[in-house]
Length: 389
Image (tube, rainbow, N blue to C red; front, side, top):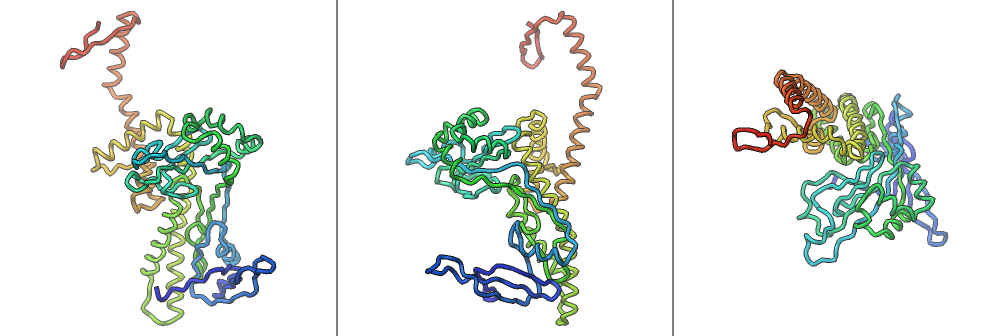
């Protein structure tokens, strides 16, 4: 685009959001003689609006904190992650190159930790959104895998990496048949063991001059695969609100006032949703590593998915479907999901205490008592019911 200029090797070192000035340290490269980076000048820039999209450790946010009373929360969860890889089979057929199904996110839940595998076409250090069908997209045949583990377990394995394969055999059965023990040890030793951070802050703006988006405003753990989506949604929401407050006036004060109103509205609206998706991401880690093996959780998911597929008029959807495949606000997703949960609970309780169920339980008790507790086999007799044998 002709009106966009990109400058590389510019590091934000200061910003005055009141005077609309920013300072960048310009790196001109490395000295061939000393092989050290040269930082020989600082550049001052005047701006109307500074949009900070500079990640979890945002300099734009850091300098904004000097001008607004920003509440800030940074949390490292007690989990580190390390990457592994399931290699492709040597095969001339694309479909047979996959050692496991390419159409699923594979999870080995361990209650307090987990191991996951997804087709390597995603090529992300941590997984993104689960794609419904990858078989026609990914022809590589390999899988990128991630181990999520509390720091204490990592410390134990780091003390003796040779025990990593036996750890996998104990908690992630079948993985060592997909990744050789030697490759497991090599990946564990050579790949970094990295932390997971969650950041919340409010507000996301200052006056009419600065706003932060993406990880700068709400870095989150990756377990909902919504980090990039949430950042792009920030941009969509921000510019829709800026357009709403756009003034055709050429008066500088009027433009400044309109932009101030827009940023305030954006910050008020988006902070709620940013905090909501951060919480959802943390909750989804518990679901992925522990809840998926709970019969109650499985029943609720089955019931929700059945209602959404066969009775769509009810507007029933799983929380994951609402988050990943729609434009609903994250805070609204939580509200609707909680409402659905209450309705399901009331429905199940109502069913259990209904006269029909109670009568059936009484009849079953009397029937069992009549047979003296002996084992009874039931044989199906066409359309006329069961016959005891």
